[in-house]
Structure formats: C-alpha cells, structure tokens
Image (cartoon, rainbow, N blue to C red):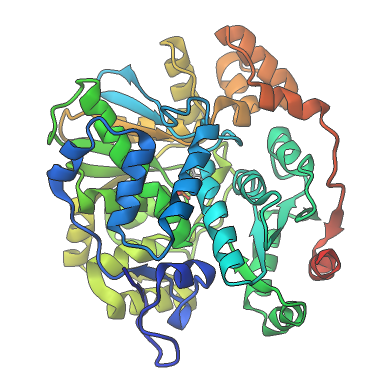
Length: 489
Ligand SMILES: *Cc1c(COP(=O)(O)O)cnc(C)c1O
C-alpha cells in the first residue's frame, strides 16, 4: 500500500510514497503528513477468523492487510517484543470494571505506559530499515513524560539509530525522570532542559525544520528523524489492540460477534483514537468513539461545535499531563479521510495562520457520526479515581477522564471499552492525593501508600529505579540544546 499527503501534493515531492518512506520522512507537502491511500476493508469475516488468535497472529494479519513494504521476518521479530509484556500470551488484558464498562489495559509493557504498544515494535522496524539502507538516523524526542522513556527503551542499543531525548527539568514525575536518566547505552543521550515542555518542544520543532542543522548532520552521514505520534509507523501498531479488545469482549461472552460497542479513549495527539477510527473502518462494529479530554478541551470543542479555536487558549497543566495538548496532530488524518486533501489543506493552513477554523454543519455532522466527546477536570478525575478504587479498580488519572465520557456521552446501553493508558505507578502522587487527600507526596512515598492501601506490590521495574545509577547527568539551558546534540553525535 502507498501513502499520500493530507494537504495534497506540491509538485516537488512524489505523489505517493511507500510505508518505509513515510516513516523515515514523515513530513509531506505544505507541512502535511502521510496517510494510507485507502483503508483495507476486512469485514466481520476477519473478526470471525481471528476469534481464537493470539495477539501476535492477529497483529500479523492486520499489518499484512496494510500491505506494507517491510519484510515478513522483520515484522515477526518486531512482534516478538510483545513477549516482554507482563503476560506474553496476553499483552493487553481486558477487564470488566462495572456494568457495561470494560478496561483495556495498554500499559503492561517495559515502561508502564501505552506508548510501548507502538514504540516497542516501531523501534525495531526503524532500525532494521536503517540497516538495510545502510543509513544512520538521529531520532529527536521532546517529552513531557511518557514518550521519552518509551522511545529510549525501544531504541536502546539498536543499530544505525541514535536518540536524543529532551525533557523539562522538574516538569516530569520522579518515576518518569528516573526511567530516562538511568538509561545506559552508547546510542542514547538524555538532556534535562531548564524550561517547560513547550521550550523543549519548540527547540525540537526548530531543529527538525532547520536546513543548517540537517546539513551539519549530513556532513556526519546522519539523517534526522522523529518518533513523534504523527509517524504512521506508530499509528499502524495502534489499530491492533482495538480489534483485540473487541475480540476479547466476544471471548468473555460480554457481547455477541457483530454487536456494537463504544470505544472510549483518553486523547492528546489523537493517535490512540485514530487507531480506533481505522479499526472501525476496517472491521469493528463501533457505535461511536468517545473522546475524553482534560481541561485542555480543544477536542471536546471540535467534536461538539465543529470549532477548532486556539485564539483564547493556553495549555494548562493538569493531573493528566500526557493529555495537556492543544495542537492535536492526528486530527489532520481524520479531516483528510472525511473531507479530502484540498479541504484539509485549507483548514490546517487557516489554523497555522489564524489559529482557528470552523467546520461546516454538514462536516460537523459527518464528524459526529463517528465521535462524541467530553472533558473531565482534575477534581472530577480525582473523584472517579476514588470511587473506582472503592469498588475495587485502581486506575491512573488519564484513564479516569474516560469515566466521565462514559457517564455523559453514551445514548445507548452498549458495552464500552475504556483504554487505560498508564499504570498507577507512573502518576502515584495524584492517585495518593485522590485516595487519602495527601498533598505533594514524593513518588516513592505515594507508591508505598497506594501499594499498602490496595494490598498490591510495586512492580520491580518501578521500585528498582530508585536504586539505579544515574547515568544521564546533563542539565542544560535552552540555548545549549543544538550544541549539546552536535557534541553527542
Ligand atoms: C500519550 C498518552 C495519551 C494520549 O494519547 P494520544 O494517542 O496522543 O491521544 C494518554 N494517556 C497517556 C498516559 C499517554 O502517555
């Protein structure tokens, strides 16, 4: 399958590219991104065929349906990385929590957040492509917490790839910071930056767009790439678990094959939700995809009013920081799929220059055919964490936002799959606060308090972080980033 450009073609670049081109050079004409030329339609036959398949067998068949230019043996090897998850037979457990609500737990990988679902196999695929082409890549990442650890973990010691990961010093949780600064491999560099997440994100964007910086890398025979969430190499692995979760509900006899469900996704850059949208297009009987946000509720505004308006908005820090996003990059692929390249270009360029756009009534109706949305503020989220804990389910603050959408967005009493995107260990101070009222606990104390309260163990890979040697000591100013990267390579 080939990939085409969300904002149309500028006459300079190729009109279509292969999957491997699209993942190595993810930016297309007019600042757009690549989307599949068409989505394979597989129907319920596909679901019936896989009712008893393992995660890996299902995954292989979905990737095959996209007909990507990656060797079958490389895909097989990439999929073995799911063996590193807690239960290699079932990397994504789906558990009943209450009434119609089932939680699909996407956080059982090495860094305890859902970014592993896509980044684990993606890292292997990218590295093997680089080796095959005899090219070297520098992956730059800016992280507010979850992407950094997952990107470092997947590229650690992989050939032909180096990673520089920037995080705002003091802007992540202790666990997230330790996951990064204790990574020890020749090809990894972690930079703590004096500033906030926007500072690191802006530095990243500037470097990715800088011809001079790219030339300096080229002089050293290195290409620049990014492992950010618009990369289709990540998105493709995010289709699989939606299909898997649906089949799990059938296997658990919660639904009959063919019965419609709601998918309920805590959203930021919309990669997870986009995977659900593709799964629905391919084969899944889905009533609606419920989009949960926190107080940075631009997606709620878009889906309820057809308005994407950044003019009076500023990112506000919340207790679900991985969703503190106002420019939600993967929405562009939904616009493209629904309204075509010409209209997408018009809307996205208006967003770039005037910081807002408005869909027509007909467009909004099309969008609302698929999506419903609501947002959950921090106090509501805390209450959901507490109530859920009291009835026996411990969850993180990102997952909690879905419980609000579950309460407010459903018109029908259908089974609902909530996607849980982080383990409780990654946001323990917020959870301890919700459960006991304790404020400003350190991660280590909060972890202990919750473990005691819930009578569970702190997972070894989290506990072990506090005793691990800190190997990445560099803390720098914003204006030193470029030089520090050049020193590293
Ligand atoms: C990245 C992330 C999200 C948001 O996912 P998107 O695919 O960007 O919408 C939600 N929760 C957690 C914990 C995350 O790490």
